[in-house]
Image (cartoon, rainbow, N blue to C red; front, side, top):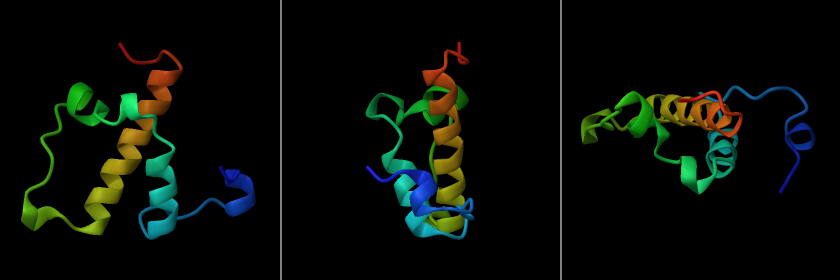
Length: 75
């Protein structure tokens, strides 16, 4: 796996960068992939809402929940 610092010497703009968001998604452990639904009761998007900016925001939120979960910061 690439080191983030090597691939992105400057922090990427995740909402604008599909490659950075894909890398972020792949870094979420499988056990944490459903944390948005489990912890925040997120029901997902309807077909008409499936636009990159919304789905990338959901990815960012899920990554943050995963980060918190891995460090024992979630109930």
